[in-house]
Image (cartoon, rainbow, N blue to C red; front, side, top):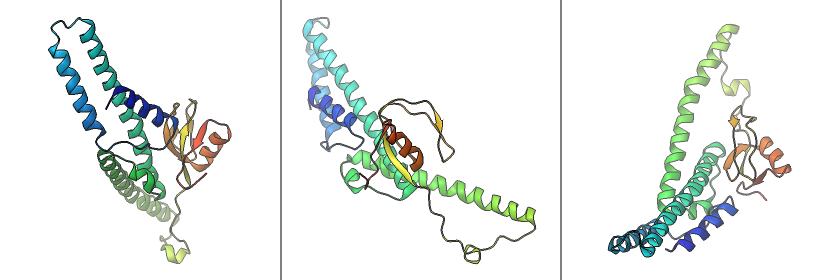
Length: 208
């Protein structure tokens, strides 16, 4: 795997909010190539020679480029995992394009978010409802008795931020501090406003 090929991957990843196709053994190939370059550096008698300096510059450039690929793709994987846990939407095409280690990260993040949300909501929601009902001197009716069905989660959008914006409070009460090229799940109303103002690009699976 050469440096130019890695830089092309970085460009592809930055130009779209979706994952691009990559060889499943990408990191192994980069690791092997870096090992070969380092062996060439050690073989140079003069570490200050032009040849040695050129090789070391290529090693540094490859390391920084592969870090860029990891940073960009890991943000996308994180956003996809959050989207799945919030809206129960799993983009099979995006999952298919994940590297094995990225798929493992995706599954583990989704499980952690889901477990944390269930744990916190189960701890907080019943207590708050019970306290409010007790204060009013009434029993908490069952969902069926109250005529209430399952609570639908608020609609969300997966967007790619096209330019930096000042921090704002979303419809979900969270504070969002977003930078250019961030890929994030936002409440639908906030996302729609940003898209209308050409500040964000809607990349929610299943939408145009």
